[in-house]
Length: 230
Image (cartoon, rainbow, N blue to C red; front, side):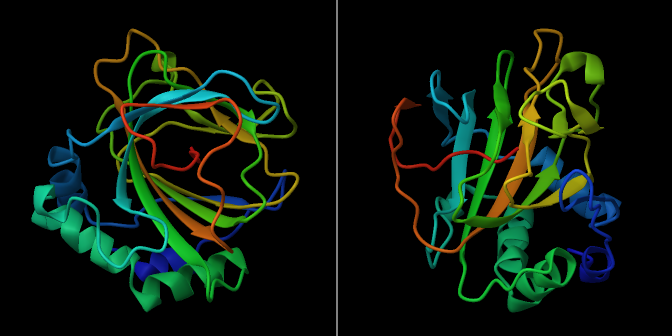
């Protein structure tokens, strides 16, 4: 399902930090299967209204909880999503992420989540948690206009308007970011004009178990997820 050669051959941008946008990671057929069966249940509303580094609002569903051996809610997933999780958990995928990121990821812990971001959803300009090494984002919207907000912004500083690059969450688009103290990024608020939720998946590699809760974090419906990427 995943073209590991496309991943390994991706070239990191060095400015304003180490990141890259990757196309052609999966076939059109695989992408259509994943998009058409993107899960609709099991999401929890996540919100943080205060905090020095990050505020956000969106809905999140765990696919593989941090350090878990089995996917969460596997029986609710389509065959395509089960296959994708299996490939994301493979040693070959981890080696490919190492090759492009330049980071050694053994024995990093993996976490996989999917997000549905409706009107008003956003992630402010922020740096990722210091224990998070690499984030790989995949997008699943067949149609998306920048006028609808929801674009990932690669930032030059802690300001959502200091834009180095802007990536719409279009089907087949993938972004990899290497965590550093310069790796500022954020997601613009989704507008009411968006005809459907913004759909994304995030694979995160953690050096160690982070704290589950931070001051100001509010999890609406159930408290067991970590902070978002993009």
